[in-house]
Image (cartoon, rainbow, N blue to C red):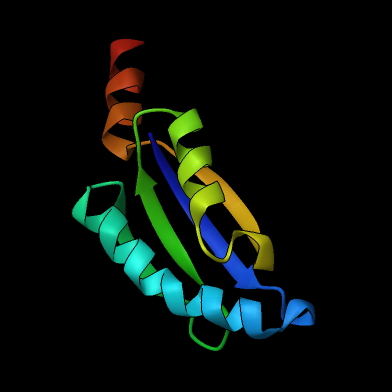
Length: 96
């Protein structure tokens, strides 16, 4: 299962704890990439946040990884489940 996560820092919560959490995000993301749980990480230019693509076995695993993110309590999230275009095309072909 793949999920696109767009996250933005909640600047009204700016604090020392938030700055420390932001500093830990790179290591957290690198570890998830090495484990194959995150396929790509992007900075959103001109914004305080990012876009990550998770690739996990279940929505429960996804929720657990998201909740463990250092910035979890300091950000707002938009989450989009993703479907492979090729899978949709194959499904369409099988119904013809």
